[in-house]
Amino acid sequence: MFNVVAYQVASAINIRDVKSQLNLPLLFSDSDELFYQSKTNKFLYIFQYGVICFFNLTLEEIELYMQMVRPFFKVPITERISEDITVELQENLLKVEFQSIILPALDLEMVRLIMLNVSQSVALDMYSELSENLLLETHKHTQFLENNGKLDISGNKLKRFIGKTLNIKNKISENLYIFDSPDSTWENEQLNRLNVGLKQTFDLKDRYRIIHDRIEIIKENLELFKDIMDHNESNKLEWIIIILILVEVVDMFIAKLFF
Image (cartoon, rainbow, N blue to C red; front, side):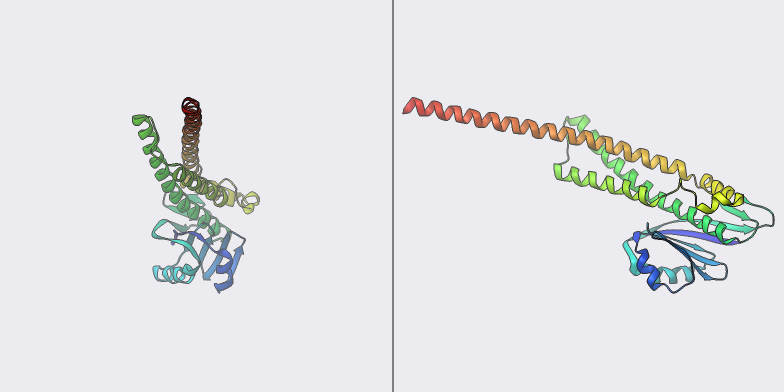
């Protein structure tokens, strides 16, 4: 039995620097991922979106590699989010269950596919928490608007809130390609079955859709807040103009009256 565990360790990892510094056999790499072999039947997978996944490594080995990669973390996460699953081997059987996967053999592409899906599940946990917190914060402002008929957030804070929401949306779009199956799954029936089973087990598509829907709700609320704020600013400007005109009229009246 082999254990697979993934950790969200940072908001991002500098893949280029890791590749130049980590002296391990590199099995696959691109601008977002590094797939290494540590020892026989031991692997680690490093992702740009801040997740590291380990296959069949002891806790001591995991911590050792964590320390090696730590200098390349961008905004480290103190409380790691993790996901784990076990892999068993049974001849002529491929099956994905709730907490375990049965493979007919220890195929490298299958291992990589499992680690990819576990890692994306961890990343979705982080983005789910972030989007839920944003939605709760948005709800506080809408509740205040309902109770008081006005907003309790300034223009600068609203702009920062909009920027925060858009950044999270962009990170999800850039980093989580859960709808894109690896090329190898199109060429191999077993890999395709495994990929479909993993996505169903981790409920990746539904969880992604929930996060996406939350972000869209938040965006709609923020656009409404912005419209209200723009309307208020427009009203203020109109009153300033009216007051200035009145001051000018009064000044002219006084000038004619006394001079």
